[in-house]
Picture 1: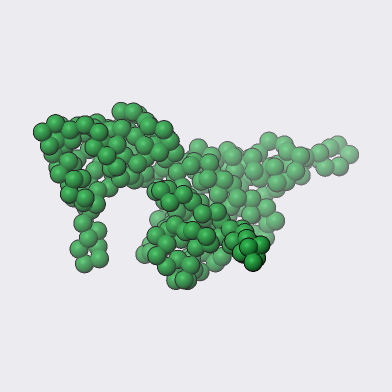
Picture 2 (picture 1 turned 60 degrees about the vertical axis):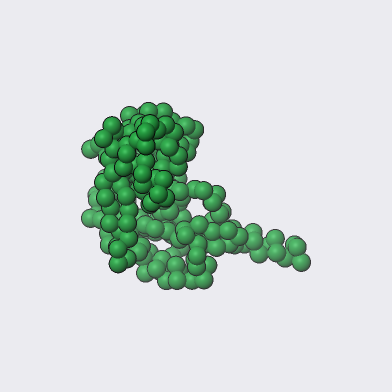
Length: 279
């Protein structure tokens, strides 16, 4: 009986992905298989590289949705019992529900054979161009498609390595796309220092794992729900002064903002800190 239960649990993990720690606040992002205008056996490599870049950023919980039909099936998937009360997090086989889905369309992915003087194949070169957008699963709304075109690869031993090299040339550009379209958010977990009911230093749940750096500024907002809609109220700005491990950061509170932040935090109000993007 125990063996049977183990096999079932293992199968669920393989299908759904390993469950994340309960206190993991990172955004859940799914990646749908990129479509391709031409029938290319290397199209899947583009999707795989985007998944790899997302995962390596350590800012997201990445869910593989390449075997499902993009947004429609994602919406249907989240109606399944596996997602009930999951709050985007699961235990023992409850599936992770993606909040946003990255979709893409490959415009071209030419792979060229490099030949020797006698006509034999010496190696391969490749380039890739595609469009990518982000879809909010809850609303179905998407960002405008952004175009990416990689540099032609150097000569490689295989077509796959040539396509991968062409994708690698876009790494910085794609990282910037993620930064702008997925701004870091965090919650206040502790008032570290206060004076006369005014917060001077706070600890937020965001650190090196989310790409936060010393000197970064966060906008602090009170979030209230009215008729099912979130209404944000500005409480001020805080500045990161010290990183505390991978998951936390110590922040200095602006002089005019400490009273509001202190009062709302102690009232157990919902407070969101959003990284101010420097473009």
